[in-house]
Amino acid sequence: MKNIITIFKKEWDRVIQDRRLVIMVILLPGILIYTIYSFMGAMMNNQEQEMTDIAIVNPTDGFTNKYQLYENDNYLNVIEINESQVEEYQNMIDEEEWTILIVFPEGIEDYDGSGEPKEVTIYYNPNVLASSNVSNRFIEYLIEYQEDLFKERFDDKKIYVLNQTGTTVDESQLMGSILGQLLPMLVIMFLFSGAMSIGPESIAGEKERNTLSTILITPIKRKELALGKILGLSVLSLLSAVSSFLGIILSLPKLMNYQGANLSIYGFNDYILIFLILFSTIFVIIGIISILSAFAKSVKEASTYITPIYILTIIVSISSSFGTNNDPHILRALIPIINSVDSLKMVMTFSDNVMLFTLITVLANLVYLTGFVFILNKMFNNERIMFAK
Image (cartoon, rainbow, N blue to C red; front, side, top):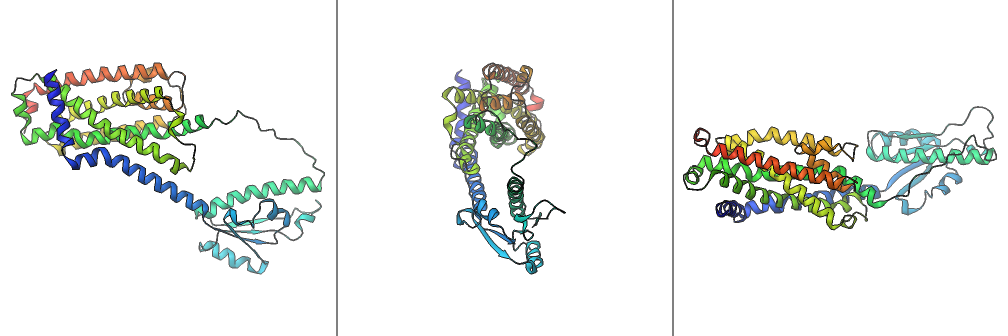
């Protein structure tokens, strides 16, 4: 046990005493995520509040009053133009100098249903996001306005009445569903990227500098060396993941412009489960990286071996996070990485089977850890691998 602690402390000191690594591996991920997501949220919020230019031909009182188009609170610049200016404003929309144009026919509110229906035209630029979004909103307005006119002209006769029913909105469950799709994928990616920052240097780097051979000739047992390195790298990588996790959580309210997005929807037990999942997952990731690093002759070669595994992890994380099944089959808890993504998603979405699934996930990951320590022990005992040039 003493040797394991010594190796653990050696790995810890190597990173902690290097200010550059502390900033890059532990602090920077969370700070960058918080800054980027907060900036994105602020930009989206500003975009929503930007003044929208709307030109209307023959505007009706019923339409403008119903949607309060002349109220400044709506960030709308609504002007009335005549039919001779239609082409001019269409060109302005094409040139991205105006948002949308709505053309009402004269006397639309006096239409009695005889003859051909009158035509309302809405002109926008589908290549401009703001123009496209505003047009979609006003199309809904025009549909509602058409229904109002129908009720007024024809005594509110209806073919059917649409009754919209559903469960009461649960903000915690809604927020959990959003986090369940976003966070598991990102957290696993940050776990792996954090491990990649320090893992190859720990073994392949020492091989490259010939310092590992000095450790191998000491009386230390190879399994103690393997376990000490995996534990040390795992704790350091976990700190990077926690930093990233906090950055995501703290920035989500600004990103989503949703003031209810806070940590209070999850309890103490939920955070314990998240911690256990993260800690067991990093064992798997570090185990894989350690084995590939031990096989490689240099840090560069180790990074070459690890990159395809990282890409595969991203693909698996994305496919699992955005799946619609919040209650996966119990056998998925035995598949590395997938089990961690599923477990995190189940915690975030308050799944009923989360305790059992998480327990199996953690145990499975610990079994994988045992296997990785065994393989790494064998590799440390193999002089052809350890002293290959």
